[in-house]
Length: 95
Image (cartoon, rainbow, N blue to C red; front, side, top):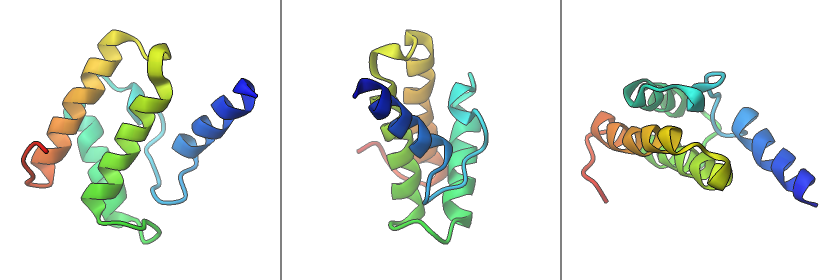
């Protein structure tokens, strides 16, 4: 069962129905680049269900949560910083 769950979550991030994600974007060590890429993907998507900001932040949060303990601490820090960059990119304040 665990194998199918891993496959399911990996499939979602790789083949999202809502956003066309840049390949390996969550592996980047540049939070601003991750935010720019997610913002671009969310704004150009016509398949997303929510607003662009909501879709981009949801995908980033989903990836962090699904990676869980398998996510190296350094990369988790980069992804958390990407949340702040995403807020800035959309002109939002920290929630």
